[in-house]
Amino acid sequence: MPDPAHEQVHAAVRDYLDTWLRRRDTDRLLALHSAEVCGFGTGVDEAAFSPEDVVRIVRRDIEQAPEPFDYAIHREHITFPHPDVALAMIAFDMKTRIHDQSVHLHHLRGTLVFRREGSAWRLAHLHGSFPTTIHGEGEPYPIKELEDRAQVLERMVRDRTQDLENVQRHLEHLATTDPLTGLHNRMKGNHALEDELERARRQSSPLATIMVDLDHFKAINDHQGHAQGDHVLRAVGQLLHERLRETDTAARWGGEEFLILCPHTTAGQASSLAETLRQSIEQHDFGTDPPLTASFGVAALEPGDTAEGLIARADRALYAAKRASRNCVEHA
Image (cartoon, rainbow, N blue to C red; front, side, top):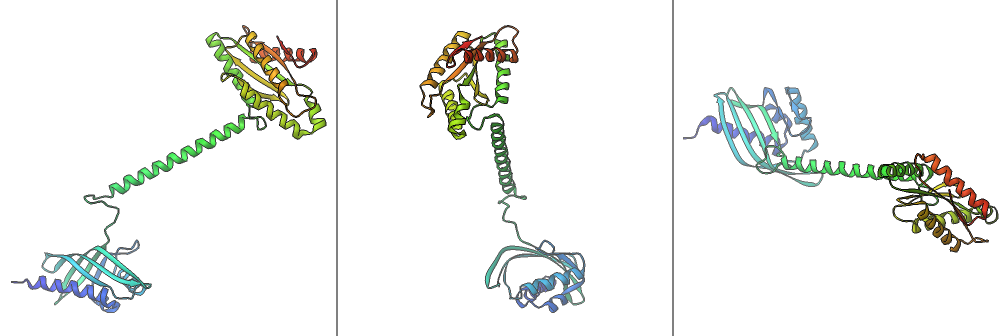
């Protein structure tokens, strides 16, 4: 035999939903509330801790979307924690039109608490919710979504780190590269010299340096213009880059001077390399008149040498070549 109280609450649930969703009748809906009604809606700010909050939320809800909602309850469960208190749990769908667009809301859930007041059951509490779409089946929390988000964040951090590393490498390149020739600048050349000295001492291996100076370069700038002078410097830088061994290091030392570091190389081997470079420059057409030549000074590492001492001896050899006849190789 049907339970009268259960039937009454069942009817109260339908009456409340019809008034709220189908009729959109604000005044009658508020009349169905208990004096101390409260609840939670689905909006971020729809937390009603007082009857005044409920009135505000209900009025706004109906004003913003006055069109009727159709609804269908798929499941209902009613219990009585107290003879005068009923708890109704419902799962339902609803649809309407808002701004001339069809809106369908599925798998909504509601918990309605009714209180018996005289012969009527009035709403004392309502909690409505939309199940989140980021939860997977069998997940009480959106584990898959969190994992995906973590992967996205990791990728963003990784990409950002890579970008920063690329920028750092680019800045280091700018700070250590001569912009005209593409060779190391003097600062980088000095660092490379210190590194090679340390390696040569540690390995007890030979090390040679070659100083190169382009002959009569000032005349090129004076008579053919600085653009031609820049062209010559770029071409010499390219020639050195192509002719040197992989283990050698070339730097623009200043103006028309270049430094070449030759690890694991004796003075004789460095002199032979310098002669090869001298001939390559002499035979190359740089578009200058007279043809471009270069002078070379070679110095090999000696016991107790410092970087300054090694460079000073290579400089002395270079000046000896300049004083001799230019376009030649001298060694200290």
